[in-house]
Image (spheres, each protein chain N blue to C red):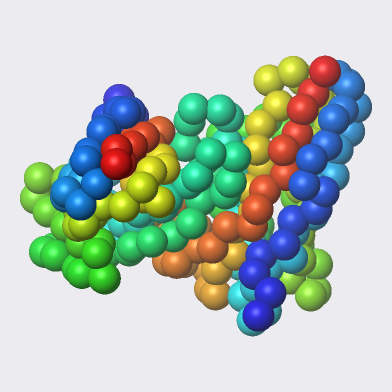
Amino acid sequence: DAGVTQSPTHLIKTRGQHVTLRCSPISGHKSVSWYQQVLGQGPQFIFQYYEKEERGRGNFPDRFSARQFPNYSSELNVNALLLGDSALYLCASSLGQGASEAFFGQGTRLTVV
Amino acid sequence: QKEVEQNSGPLSVPEGAIASLNCTYSDRGSQSFFWYRQYSGKSPELIMFIYSNGDKEDGRFTAQLNKASQYVSLLIRDSQPSDSATYLCAASGYSSASKIIFGSGTRLSIRP
């Protein structure tokens, strides 16, 4: 069984650019959540999507947006990149809307220069 | 005040001993609690979850929850060098079940 897959694994962008990160959840899982993890900190919640609708949003600026597709895969978009957006972006998959037993993908390491 | 607090460590434990990791949380509405293990440069891996007061055992791992004290712990018995990692404590609430709040993690080092 495939786990949560994220692409790309690494990315280098320039300040002001736009980035799109992708996530495919575990087969049968309908909920996808996005987290940002800065070095030395725990993951910070950005968004949750369930059944293609936004069900939760963390304390992130409007430059961050996401969506979920009919096949339950998801994209995270970040506009007008800042140096401080450099982080590991994690996608978590869970069966239902509740946060129980969320499983993480390998993450996308974003570096903004 | 952070919503989930952990001692950052590092916590150094000899091989074969019991490692004890602790965590406190501030939101009394928290319902579910998780322990994730994260190796350097890797993503978090779920190792235990607990919802009810008391102990929950899974192999060498025991999670303990005390809702009255807002305290969660993880015991690792017979510690192995492969247990060396950062351990993240996390909580979620019924009212915001979509959101998991993580602590900053405790670095655990098992010395041979």
